[in-house]
Amino acid sequence: MSRRGMPMPRRGRMQMRRAPRGYGRGQPQKKRSFFGPRFWIGAGLIGFAFLSYQCSTEYNPVTGEEQHIAMAPQQEIALGMKAVPEMVQQYGGLYPDQEAQALVDRIGNKVVQESDAADTGWQFDFHLLADPRTVNAFALPGGPIFITTALLQRLETEGQLAGVLGHEVGHVVARHSAQRMAKQQLTQGITGAVLVAAGGGGGEAQLAMMIGNMVNMKYGREDELQSDYLGVRFMSQAGYDPRALIGVMRILDEAAGGQAPPEFLSTHPSAPNRVATIEAAIDEVYPGGVPDGMVP
Ligand SMILES: [Zn+2]
Image (spheres, rainbow, N blue to C red):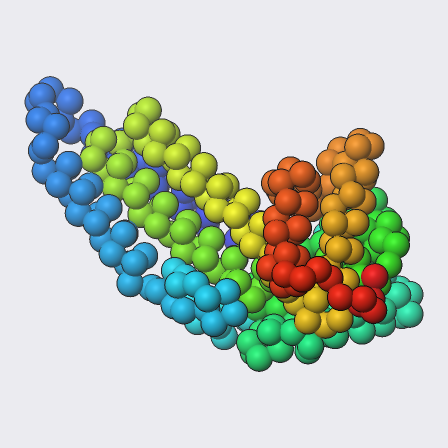
C-alpha cells in the first residue's frame, strides 16, 4: 500500500532525462552552426532567468541590502515551521530537561527582543535538541532556531549562548535561505538553458552545473560571515559582551579537532577568518572599545 506513491517521482525523473536525449537523436547527421536556433533559445532562457532574478528585489532594513528573494515572508515562515518536526526527529528529539530549554528560551528571546531583530516580524522560536554528539546550531527560514545539547554543554557562559543564538537569528533576519533558493532558481534556469543550447547532456551541461554549485557555495560562506556580524550586533544590543562569540569559535575549533568536524564548522569559513570578521564587527559596534559591565 505504502509503495503506491513511489513510482511517481521515478517516472518523472526518467521522462526528464529521456526528453533531451530523444530531441538530440533526430538530428545528428546535420552539422549544426553554433549560432543556430538552439543557441538563441538558450540565450533567451538565460536572459529570462536573469530578468526574473533581478526583478525579485527587496530591501532588507536590518542588513541595509537589496536582496533577491522569490517568496513572501509568510511563505518563508510556513516553510520553516513545516520542517520543524523533521529537524527535531533528525537530532534525537527535544532535550527533556525543561530547565535547560528555559535557559535557551530566555537568552534567545532576550537577544531578539532587545535588538534590531525585534521589529522584523519573523516568528522566532528556540529548540534545544537532544543529540549529545553533533555539535551544531542552525536556523530554518522564518524563525525556528535549534541548538544541540552537544554544543550547549560545551559553552561556558551565557554570552557564548547569546552569540550562537544571535548568529542564527542573523541567518533568519538576513533571509539567507530565501536568497539561496532564489539563486538556485537562477542556477537551474541557466543550467536548463545551457542544456538546450548544447543539444542535450554532455560536458558543457556538467560544467554549467558545477559552476552553479560553486557560486552557491561561495554565497553560503558570505552568509556565514554576515551572520557572525549580525550576531555581534544583536548580542551587543541585548547587553552581552560580543567578545564571547570569539570564545564560541575557539570551542567549535576544539570540537572539530577531535574526530569528524561538526556541521556548524564544516560548512563555515575557517575559524581565523571568522575571528577577524567578529573583531571587525566589534570595532564597528564599539569604536571606543567594549564598555564595562556587559554580560560575558
Ligand atoms: Zn551559520
